[in-house]
Length: 161
Image (cartoon, rainbow, N blue to C red; front, side, top):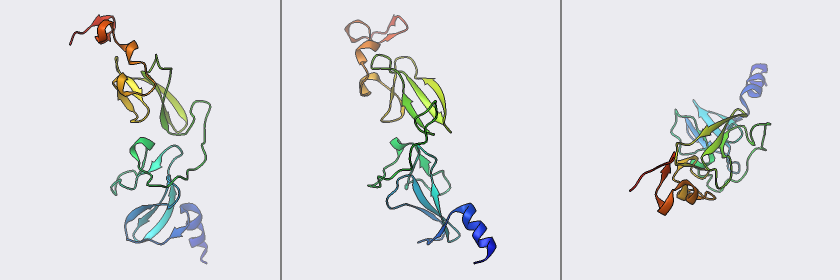
């Protein structure tokens, strides 16, 4: 084997067969792994820890996304977690607080955690990875975000609907 081919193999991962010249396809068992084919040369790739491969992502877009945006289609394997002192995974968004304090979440990027707040009156929904109405969020006490008789309370001001 040519020494340049060995170096290329070490830097880019093993070369694998491509069903098409330019495409991406999922690893058959692992949801955060895929093969990317460029000009007929396939390379095994691994998403950053905490993100998953979205087989429906169009070519030209980044294929690794948050779990809420990906259907693993039966592929259950994942790389081991790589937590930091701030985050349970290198990438992801995680609810902070309890059922009475639902509006704050931790946004992890490359293992660094950033605390973010939902707009007033909204709660962080771990299922959709976005801020949502409290009654749409599991384990969030929607009663605590409203005033008397179910009227929404915004900073001690009552809004009548």
